[in-house]
Amino acid sequence: MALFSGIKDAYKKSEAVVIIEDCFNQIKETPLWPERGANSSTNQLANILVNGAWAYKPDMLGGSFGNRPHKLALAAFALARGVERMDIDYDFRQVAGLALAMIMDEVAKNGRLYSFNNIDAFIFEGAFKLLDKELADAPRF
Image 1 (cartoon, helix red, strand yellow):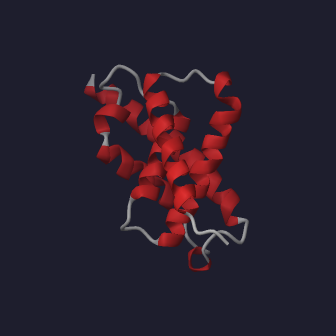
Image 2: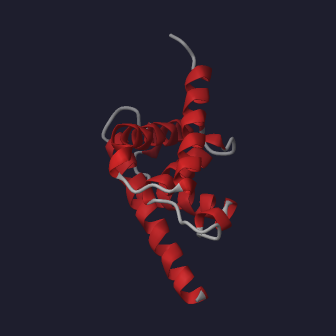
């Protein structure tokens, strides 16, 4: 059984990595992507975020509570962890925040079209609160 659990974990992680990488690639085409990160691998950055999130909450993300999160929820959780971490570069925290906003925009607009579960709802609630806090703390120009 543990063998199949590991395969499922790897599959779920890879789904989230693809979503985050797609968001990063869209951002990379804009002036919002940090210049010093021009040659950064979006896949590598996405993998770091997803693996870090998984290490932080392996039981919740691995389905120990009954349900596994949807790939959008896992991607949102990984990005939210990236935004919350103070040890990563400020510019890349901003990129993670923008990617999180992109995912949460999809959830807000089309959430009814997905089969989300209680773990997803918990993750999305936290992500929306984090975005609200980050926007409230953002400098005003």
